[in-house]
Image 1: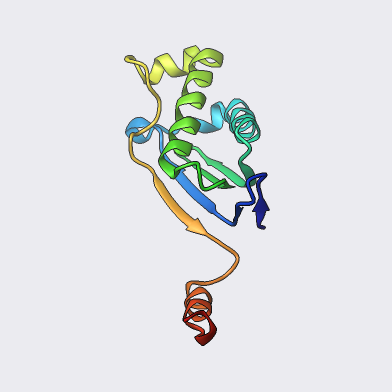
Image 2 (image 1 turned 135 degrees about the vertical axis):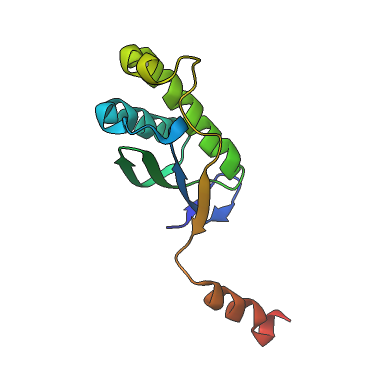
Length: 132
């Protein structure tokens, strides 16, 4: 789905993020309602476009669309930091049993992009003779 902004930017940028709790602790099923709620709230507050969300006991998948002014690293940083604060606030007993020094998420993450058309289709469009 393309989006148009007031400055006439048209974009179709979709990111698939995956990240894990530190030490790959499997506890997300115990805090899933809070985590899902907070992820939806972050997506809405930041005008990202919700696509899909899945929680496993030991990792998170988020698929969203975003304006090109938002870098993937800034998006995932926001998602991870805000949800960590919320989990510590709402589930201190669970969090203290797993993390004695604060924090929650691994520093690493996966990000991939997805659109409505394939790489081959874009290359064919760019290489068409009328664009030369």
